[in-house]
Amino acid sequence: KVVLSGLGFAAFPFSGLLLATVFGRLTDRLGRILPVLLFGITFSVVGNTIYFFMADKNFLVAGRFLSGIGNSIDGAVMGYAGLIKGPG
Image 1 (cartoon, rainbow, N blue to C red):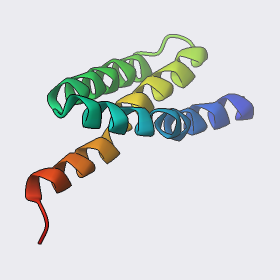
Image 2: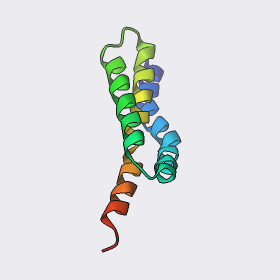
Image 3: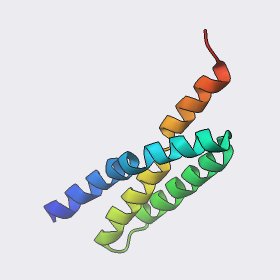
Image 4: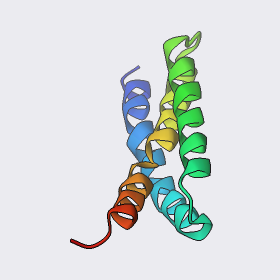
């Protein structure tokens, strides 16, 4: 039970760690944030829905992992905001 709780808490930042650079590169390659933003928001909504309506404890880990994927777009959003703002 303790191990499953630990996996549930660790799944969120672990998925963000894995995919934050992927989303950043994808945003740079596309030159647009909208597709990446929609992808991240979709994963966040699906993951939080699974986490909220979990029928099994294993869904807790899956829901947290998917939510972390959705939250890993933060770096891409900040980078894109810097590009829009420009220097100074």
